[in-house]
Image 1 (tube, chains in turn cyan, red):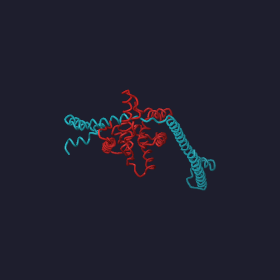
Image 2 (cartoon, rainbow over the protein chains, first blue to last red):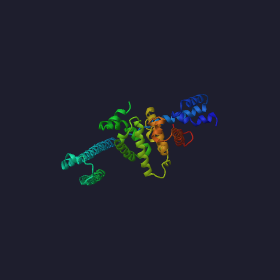
Image 3 (spheres, rainbow over the protein chains, first blue to last red):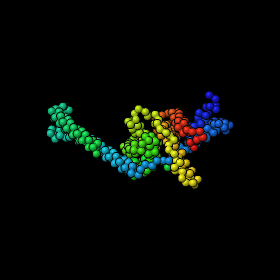
Image 4 (cartoon, one colour):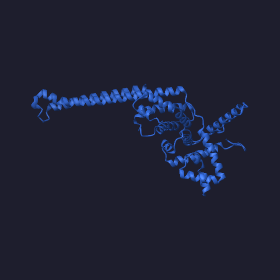
Length: 157
Length: 192
């Protein structure tokens, strides 16, 4: 393919402003000396100009208003979800801290200060561990059920 | 001035920023969606879906990125999903039909040159718009992004998720195909 043919192939890109500066200069130099390519480039430029001047379709005002209202509602819903998640994380962390702190406290009350120093795994510790597990399982199940219900309600809304 | 401040406010949950962004992008976004899906009803639904998705995902938006490109990527993904559902067999095939559109002879009633020029210009635009919608979606979108949205090639590559070289080749082919659609059907006729 000679220079003329190669440049002719990219005249449309030249009209679209899609050539690198070096190539664009090469095209400009060729077009100055080649009437055929100059005419062809002019045709492409006319087409590009027409494309740029195509009328812009306007969205109906009611559509824009509806989209805004729905997006606002979604944004509020997302905010609420984020807040609820934050509260849930705080409550879970607080509950764990409270539970763990209650073990030595109850042990202190039931067996006195010296009982705290007893490292053996006795019945009181096992009882506490079982109690904590049962309470957390019950709490976890309730939380999952509540979350599923909330999700169902949200999808129905 | 760019939309950075509105985007930052929207990420903090400011509803007024959403209103500003919607009014700023409403015409461009609707035009882009209409060029992709061609049907106003589909474009209207996608317009709403796009803003819903923006409200849902804006917290995860990286402010160092270009918001225009991100918005158009969101819209494009929704539109492509919709096109796959409604015409799964041929996303790249042109639709059949006459690109030349109807005649304006009956509208050329005024003798004033300005009025005639206006009608002729509108007629050319109509022909061009009619030819544009006959192109495959991959060509329509690259043309609208380049010439109507006036995006840089790098931005177009970002929106389409393709290399720069692919953008250039699509741009060249789309212009060639568009011009082919506008070629005069009769001797002596010109699309211009």
